[in-house]
Length: 251
Image 1 (cartoon, rainbow, N blue to C red):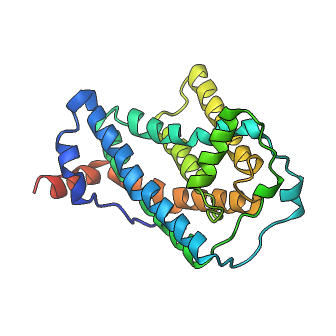
Image 2: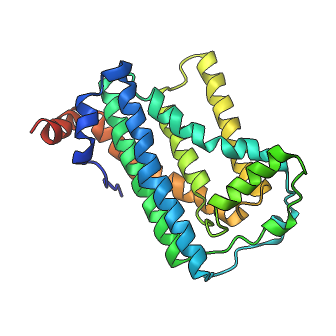
C-alpha cells in the first residue's frame, strides 16, 4: 500500500520555485524553513496550548521504565539539536533539480505528517507528568533553558513524539540524497545516526516524553517513510515529477 498525499506541489510554493536559483539556491532553503515554522511549529504551539487548556488525558502510558530513566540536565543539548535538523534538510537538499523537487515535496509531506500528530494531541491527549522528578542545577544558563522549554511546551505534547518523527524522517531523507559511497561518507552516516540516537535518549532524559511516546514516534516515522514519503519521492524525483512541477508552476 502506497500513499501519495502531498505529491502535487501547492501553488503557494510558486514564487519560491521560480526563484530557486537565487542566493546560490538558498533562497528556497529559507522558504522551506519558514514553511516549517509557520505550518508546523506555530500550529504545534497552538495545539499544545489547546490540549493544556482542555486538560483531559485519554490514558496513562507511564511505566516503571519511565521512572527508572534518570533525569540528566545536560541532555538538553542533544534535545535542542532538533532545530538543526530542519536546517540540514532545507540547506543541503538542493544539489540537483530532481533533489530540489524532492526537497519541496518532502517539506510539504513533513508538515502534513505533523498535522496528523496534532489531531492525535487533541483527540487522544496524554499528560506527561514527569517534571516533578527534575533537579535542574542552580546555574542561570540551565534554568533559562528549562524555563524556556517548559514555557513553550505544555506537558501535553506526548505521543507520538514529534521530536522523534521529524528528526527520523530528516535522517532518512538525507541518507537518500547522500548515500554512503565512501568510507568518509559511511563514517558521516554513522555519526548522524549516533547524533539521532542521542536526541532520542534526550527526549526521555529531560523528562519531556514517555517511552511510549518514543516508540510510537519511531513506528509512525518509519511507517510514513515506507508507505508515504519514499514512494512519493521516487515518483517526484523522476520524469513524472518534471511533468507534475511543469503542470503546476508553468501553467
